[in-house]
Length: 95
Image (cartoon, rainbow, N blue to C red; front, side):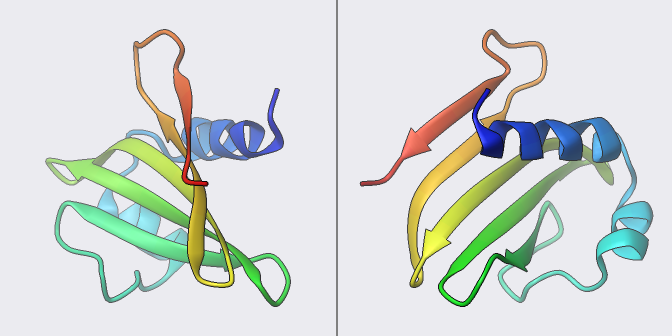
């Protein structure tokens, strides 16, 4: 299993169906690009690499999560979780 899929699976197991309040307590303030339905958070992996985690809400509850990977500010891969889909995890490469 891809390392990023494993990271996303951990996030899904921990945060799926959590409320906005619970996410805020654990992750703090979301990025400025966030709105009422989707919150973005950034985790740096060294100087030029980072992951952007998106929590998608429906009725104030997390229903989907994705991780986008960046190098030098360019998005190169996004991993999505789709509940009750086969496969549940899908990778979209941007290069």
